[in-house]
Image (cartoon, rainbow, N blue to C red; front, side):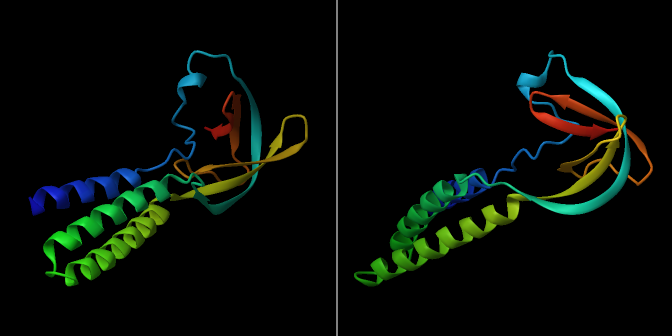
Length: 153
């Protein structure tokens, strides 16, 4: 029984920490497939590393569920009598805190901020995940679609 409940708790924590979509130029959203987009050539002026953070609040749900599961497991496994309530409260608090911290770490991804000069002479800045490498002076494609802009080789 303990192994089953521990497995469920671990699954809840990992599900809540599932990696978020940070808009890779190599990954298209369903609504961008089979739609006309536009592109233009641009020249890279500057590239700067950044951190991208997922702002969704799904981690609070996983923290609450993890805290409840931790409290239940703690009260069932540790202590007898009133001690089990203290154990349940402590293990629930720790479970919730751990789930929240793990979610925060998993919600961050490295990215780049790329300064571009378009063919019409205007300059723009595009941020995206860093799964492609760019260097100043490089000619790239600036692609626009329903989900925004992306830079690709």
